[in-house]
Image (cartoon, rainbow, N blue to C red; front, top):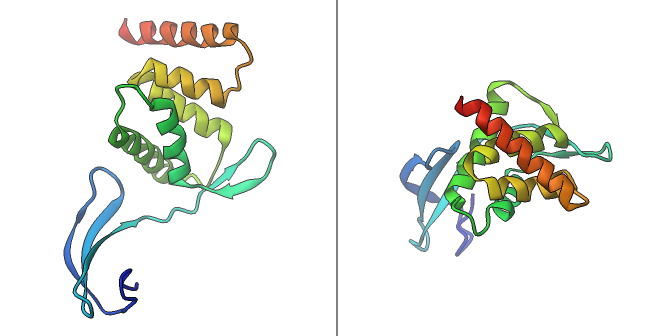
Length: 155
């Protein structure tokens, strides 16, 4: 690793701790050349492939998942930290189950299930994009399904 300020390679770690509930380690580093400090985050690099709707594959990207959920959660009571925690919990679950490949349908269903319990508006927004609803009737049906499932959980 190089100092982002001067490019020097000799660095000293001044502090190291877990970053919230994610699988990341936050490290404060100091450059031994220019004495400037900066923060790095180390995360587990999982080799998870996502099969897209067109049949192609791409590497799983945590930031892409966070961005999609963040868009659905915008202007709701869900904070960005909650979105990050939701995404991290999904990754943790996939790691624990030793999943190497997941298709976008499975991933979308997992996200929707988690969002349904957090915020109905975020759930519907995500579902609209993910399921590609074409009209209001499909949205109403999704709302009714979510309400029915919530009632089953409560009883």
